[in-house]
Length: 456
Image (tube, rainbow, N blue to C red; front, top):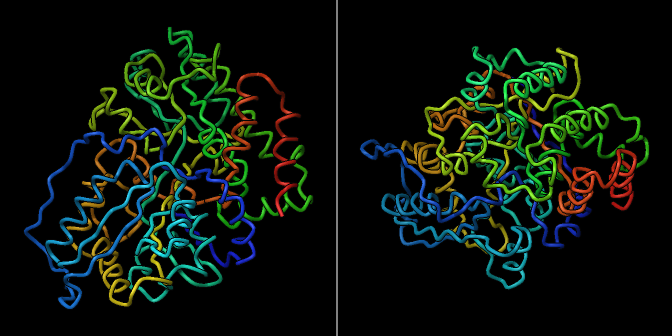
C-alpha cells in the first residue's frame, strides 16, 4: 500500500492559510447534509473485556472535546460516557453548529476558554498547531498510524481520527438488473470504459445514470481537488503542484491533470440525472435515486452512507466505489485506486489546559486506540474507518467497508491537498457556473488560476 506522511509543512504555509480560514468557510470531507440527530442502527459493544490501564489519579477531571463531525455527535457522547464509567474522567462533547470549526475554536481561544481537544480538518490543525497545540510526537499511538500522521516542522500535533475516501459510488444490483449480467467493477479501468458502461445503461433504460451534487463544498473540494491530489497520488505531490500553480511555473491551461479532470467531470455532467437543472438538484433525492435504481452512480464519499441508509439501503446491499477516471491509461494509478486519507484530526490544547487536563485528554486518545472498548466504539458506534493498524474491527456499511478493503489491499492513494479554507467556496462557485453551462473550460481554468494568483 502506498503510504505517505504530510511532512515538514512550514509555519509559513500555516500563516498563509490562517487568514483565509477566518472567512468562516468550512472545508473538510465530512458531509454537511448529515443530521446529528439522525437515529443510526448500532452494533452492540462487548464491554466484558477491558485490559486498558487507567490512571486513578485522573478520576474527577473534566475535559472538553469540540466536535466538527456532526454525524458522530451522539456516538462521541456515548464514547465519553463509557470512558467516564471506566476512568472517572468526564468528557463533554461540544458540537460545532453555526460557525466553521476554525472560527469556533479561534473564538474559544480568544475568550480564554478553548476546548481541551478539538476535532478539526487537517488545514485547521496546520494553521493552529505551533501556537496552540500540545506536542504529541512522543505518544505511543504514533506507531499505529504509519502513513497517516500530519507533521508540522517535524512534530506531531494531532491524532488522525479516521480515514475517509471518495469516488463514484455504484449500486451493483441496479447495474446488473439493467444489463442482465454480472457487473465486475474492477473491469472498469479507464474513462472510455466508464463512458461505454454509461451508454449501455442508457440503452437499457436508465436515461440518466449519474447523480451530481450541486453544493459548492462538493464541487470545489471533493471534485476539484483531484486536480492536485492526482499529481502523483501523495500529499507532498499535491502541495508541490499547488506551489507551482501559485508561483506561475505551472500553466494550468496545459497541465494534463486539469484537462483530464474536466474530461471526467464533463462525462458526469452529460449523464447527470439533473442535467436540465443541475443547480436545482436535491442532495437527499440523490440518495433516494441511487437506492431506488433511478440512477446507478453518485459521486460522493463513504460519509454518504447515512443518507443512503435513510433512503432504504441496507448494510448487506452491494454498493462500492469506482475511481475518478482521469484518462484512458489503464496503468495510471488514478484509474485504479480510490482516494482515501485521514479526514479529521484531534488536536490537544497546549496553551490553556492544565497538566492534569492534558493527561486526561491523552488517556482518552490512548483509550480510543488501545482499549478493547474504544476500538469497538470507533468502528461500531461511530461508524468510522480507523487509521490505527492495531484496530481489528471492520466497518459494517458497504461504502466504508469498500474503502477499508481498498486501503488494506493497496488500492487507495493517500493524498490530501492543503488549501486555503475559502477554496471550496470561491472555486465551488466557479464550478457551479461550469456545471450549469454558464462558463466554458477557458473561463473556469482562468478563475482557478486567478484564485491562486491572489494567494500569498
